[in-house]
Amino acid sequence: SKKTVTRITEYVWTFTGKYELIAFRGVGAQAADQVLIKSREYSREIITGSKSNPRFDSRSYSPSEVDISWLLSHLSADRSAKFEINREVDTCRTPRRNKDVTDALAQLSKLAGWSSAVQQFFRSSLFPVAELGLSDKEKRLDLAGINTDGVFVPVVPLFIEESDAEPGSLTFKPADVTQFLEESNRSLVHKITAVAGTLPTGASIVTGAEAQVCICLCHLSDVASALGEGLDYVEHMLRQQLYAAVGKQITSDDFAAFNRFHNRKLFRDDMQPLPFSFSVRRSPIHSPEG
Image 1 (cartoon, rainbow, N blue to C red):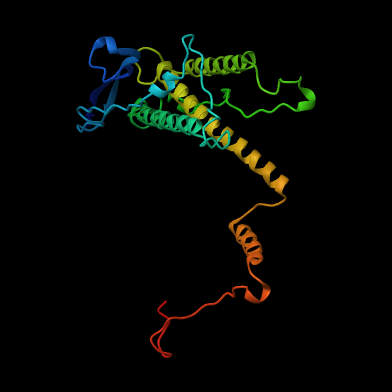
Image 2 (image 1 turned 180 degrees about the horizontal axis):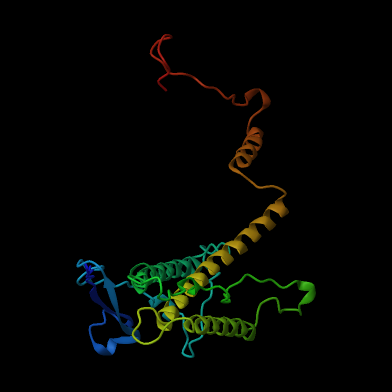
């Protein structure tokens, strides 16, 4: 009789890593200038059938930074927002077209860009390792649920009809804004809790901690985007009201016709300038040169 022995060699790789989310003052040279917001170490064993490393021996990612000095400068001592538009300066045109709002949108755009960069690290560099080398019998993670579906964005352009409002109450009171923020916080916590319940715990690569960071950063981008869209909507509304008041959209052709009409009053009818076009050429057989 014959006996066939098949020997399969498996290679076990231990993938480890660490990330930190830090707020720092200045350049963060001293420990007192740094505040650790989030830090976590993770590891996972990856089994392969080849001797080649499925990832890399060692890798360090460049830090992703964003300056939030402007945002912090608009917080009062009780951590409430203190932002207003200076309507006395000549550069203030509309609620959208002024220096204060332009600066705010620029800062939020930088913050949203940083948020996207950090999310890109998690989704492109970290999350794929969680399913690297899994067998068909091993349970795969449902990472598609790490999103902001169902999270309330408290930045919305709302208007109150004058007939339904009390005199002088066409703007939201601080209590109304507080309710918006509370609902945003409640829905955010609910979303994070629900997603974290579907993910493993311990030293796994993807846990509720990573879901919390990604969902919060995604919500941050949603808020920045909603603010820009809301301000653009207000600008569009004012523009439409102006069109309705004038009766049409004024263009450069309308201004040209207006000037031609009034310039005619400067000359008698027999002295009105006539439009002309004269071709400058070297000879009748050459093409115009000017």
